[in-house]
Every structure is written in structure tokens, then in C-alpha cells.
Length: 114
Length: 110
Image (cartoon, rainbow over all chains, first blue to last red; front, side):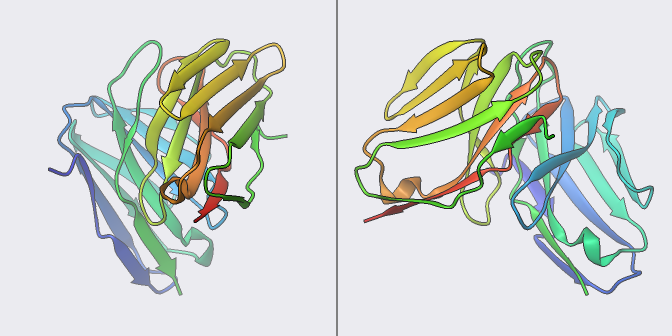
């Protein structure tokens, strides 16, 4: 059983296009995240939702818009794709805690913008 | 200066070697310290976590935190080819925002 799943796994598209990535978790977690990992493997938080409410919104271009229809799903829509958007995008989920939380990551979506 | 600094490597060692991976950080508010392992073309997975200073051991892995020096380490004993992966340190002040290091790529040669 896949705990955190993402679709698609690979996405190749032209500059200027709009695309969406979907994420689903079946762990019963209440918090979900989007991370961007660049070619140097640096993993950077983009957004986080807790119970469908946006709680982390890092300095990310407005072209990126997350949407959480329910606690188990978090989607990422990207408008007007640019070359610099090429990266691996990871979805993760965790249980909200005042202290420590373990994040479970999906397999990633490898986005290539041509 | 980044909040968390980690040498990206790559680090190449022979099988059976002791591996030492390290991170330094600048934010003294960090309380929880984690190590994630990421195999090629996979998502990161939690390997170990520690709270505050001290050591924690789990099989061949030992995590060490020195809050006075703002320095954390992960030691791998008797390294195996299957340990070849990228190791990311991560830190959290409490709650939900985790800051990751850049990751160190480790290669263990048979």
C-alpha cells in the first residue's frame, strides 16, 4: 500500500504552459507539504497545509498555487512554467505536533521545462 | 548564510569503513534533529531523530548532537554498499517547519 502517492511521476512540458501535480496520502495525517528539490539535491519547503488550511507559504512565485480539497489531498498548480521550475517536487505528510513530527515523502514528480 | 550547512560531497568509502556525516546550524532555537536517507530517484525517509544534545544509537547508526557547538553528526559503522544514498540532516524548532541541509552523497564501494 502506497502511503504518499504523487501523479504524474514525470512531467515534460514547454515553457509557458500550465501544469498540475497531485498528491494523496492514506496515513490519516492532518498536515501535508510541497517541497522543491533542485539539481544539487537541496530540499526546500514551499507550502504546508494543516486540515486544509495554509500554514506555511514560503517565498514562492505567485505562479505556484497549492490547493487542498481535503486532508488527504494536496495539489500543486503551476502557471506559465519557466526553465527554472525544472526540479523534482516532493509531497510529504505528517501528523501535526507541538514538538517533533516525522514527515513521510512521496516518490517525487520530476518536472522538466523545455 | 544558510540556517543549516552540510557538505554535499560526494563521499566515497570502502565497504566496512566507518562513515561520519556532519551538519552545522546557526539557529539556536532548533530542538529536534533528524537524519533522512534518500536513495536515487526516491523520496527521503527518516533514519533517526534526536532531541536536544546527546547520542542516540540504532544498530549500525549513531546520531550525535552538540548544541553548544551547533553541530550534529551521523556515524555509520561497518558501512555497506546498500548504504549508498544521499543523507540529509534536518532540524525543527517545534511544530511543522523543517529545515533541511543540502544532503551529502555517500558511495560505499564493495
